[in-house]
Length: 258
Length: 239
Image 1 (cartoon, helix red, strand yellow):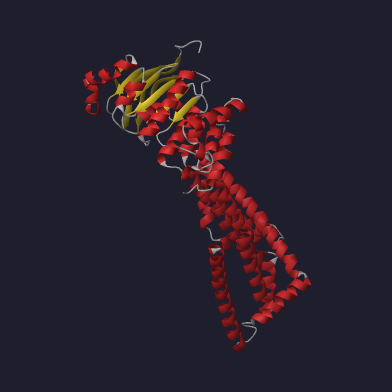
Image 2: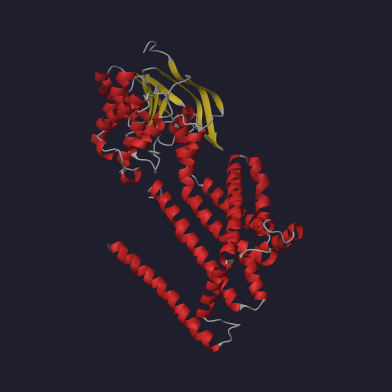
């Protein structure tokens, strides 16, 4: 009971922040040219128009699909290579400078290069950029977790005759799952942003491309509409997908931290 | 137990250093089937290292280790090393499942041990919900639950209250009477070592050597042995 009142309180505080922003926004928009700052009502109308015409659904799905594909590839390679690096000194030496190199090069350089290499391709440029951005994040996060993992538990399991597979599924993965979830969360947020950026500059479809088109047509309310959609989509991903998964994993490994 | 005197463990002049720190020097010892031996010595002298070498957790620099093939080894570590996301029962089951004990017998063994240790109300508890002493109990039950041929005990009674110690001692001795495992115990508790063991090895300070190997006479004379054995009292300072 107390919990639900608390939650209600939290939600209303967060909501009041949003309402405040909308109020200030409408006050300002009243005195400014709609080309510079459209009113919340105009933006709402633009969102509805995009939804009605089917542009919203179509481009949202395109961007969403690219994000997931790029993220999945980056996540898979990030975790696999982290495991290899932990296990084998040779791989460690090979990948360490490579990862630093990828990470320290600004994404915009990769973006320009990928446009040169792949052209304004439908998929390749955004997926490549997501990979470049997300892969080192996942890898480094996961590797750090592996380094600090409780080797005593693994020793215990080995002494008691556990096979590799059992150690992996009963000890290593459950023990690492909070970290896997948190790297997925950070990685996914970066992936979403990178997709839009890549589409904005180097693609011919998706939300980023639509944003760029609206900008070129000086349709500011549509620019705002797409921005709103992007924010809502990220929030949806966070609260509807990542949070429940994390809650479930936390319950599963219960008290691992305590 | 057909052949009571088979060697389970044999260490021959083993040496181990950690970097420039020499821990073990020419340590030799053996454990026979059905025997209980204790390793006594000042703390930090490398007793745990000896157990870890036997368990295959760490390698040695020089010498030879022989552990009889196909034997189940139960190890009670100095810290409980329980899996935090598994309950008491699941922690025990996790190691039991590694061995080809029948499903029925593993259940019976587990229940019997949990009952005897007075842990019945805690089977579904998680390690974080248990006190230090209780965790240590679970760690011991886990090692016993596989009916080990070789039982390695590293300060098994350290964080237990005296009542728990006597319960756990009884459980170990009962298992020993029924199954005759070889038991190798590391301890600082000389009185207990003398009371429980057939044989004690006394280690010097680092780099540790075995300074003495003593068979312990029959149980009733252990106390007098303790008092006449003057070298045991000065042991922590002996080099």
